[in-house]
Length: 258
Image 1: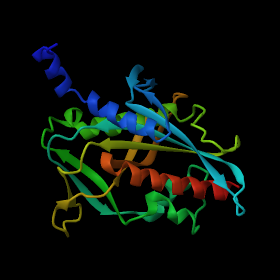
Image 2: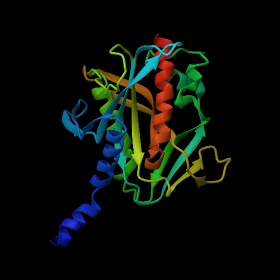
Image 3: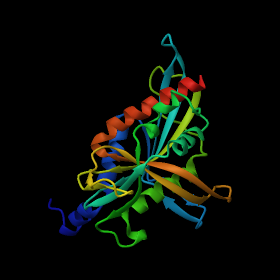
């Protein structure tokens, strides 16, 4: 049976194919996946949709290999198909501020050798600004929408209990819950970095990176708040690399908690 042209155009012009592809990857890797969950935006009192919330319980073992508990990693995910060019402006990380973001979760300690292994503290550059070739103002900027949805979803849903996905042999004791907002990109082929300080030439972006955002929001309790976030930008083909970094974060958090 032939597919009507209009139907094929709907499929080809939709980001749902990539959305589903990312969801399948997490499912295959043993994550518990919630597709397109809705939450209440306290700022505008409107229901909003997040692409994915994915959770996984990662077992932590003691020095003799005995299970001591689980660390649940929970990701608030926006999926972004990248058809055109985009540029991100990078600057040096303020390591003290980033360490504060890591330690504010309560699962890591300041001035600690193990905390320094957190993936937010690996590398010395962070993105601060961005623009896209199909930019039609801030509201039409695809990455603006993605980061806003991921961060809004996180601040609205992070107080909910995390259930995770328990692998065989894991303990029922939850040592920590680690929440991360992320944007999964179809490809970095059209992404370029520029230097915020004007000291470096533009170059291709090849590796996963973080965008630093001062984010003002209304908390679920109705109070105004402002918080510094790091938002992971992850290329689809580099999801295994990112997942391995999260595993290391979970091990450190579990070790410090236990």
